[in-house]
Image 1: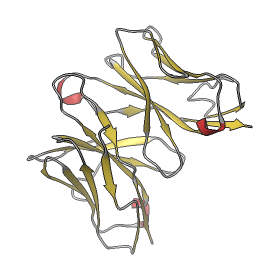
Image 2: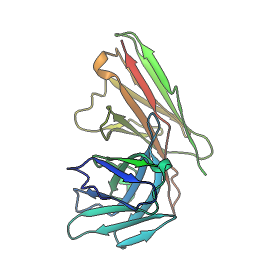
Image 3: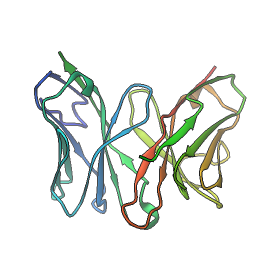
Image 4: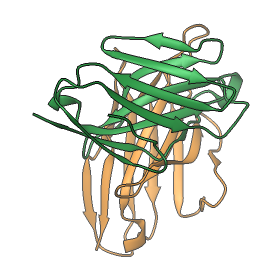
Length: 115
Length: 117
């Protein structure tokens, strides 16, 4: 399943499917991007990050793709599990100096995984 | 890994009272912490940057007299919502930079749900 982030904030998939969550970022000066998972009533949980000198980075079951030309970020989750159900946010940052950590978050996408 | 502790996790108060929220870095010194606000089913919005030993830097539209930030030590930043009103009800989240010269990291607290009656 796939979401268009800003326009389709809800994504429902079956357990075992691959999920793709999209995000359009706004600042062309951003050079550091992070995906977070947030469960209800909890703070954001780091999933994976990528710097602007890369266009792809892989983690355990997750892959982040960065397209700087169109300012687009995606998170791919392989073999999605019910425990992956949460809200997923992309965040952008200018990593240099005092700006590091001042994150601008995207709208968020609600991922629901059905057993 | 590094842990950021936020307290309380939930607070209910009467309109007009002030509420203090604490954000602690447990195993690292954080010269810079950040405070975010999140409304239900919405994204996180940066409110202010908390700098140890100096005044906080507020984002545009955030009232500094309403949301008092104190970062008196390298491991503690506090956010005080003064004269709280129902519209201040929200989920408040802090984050902290580890401040390393290389491979710096960013960690989030678990959030505080504020409900103003």
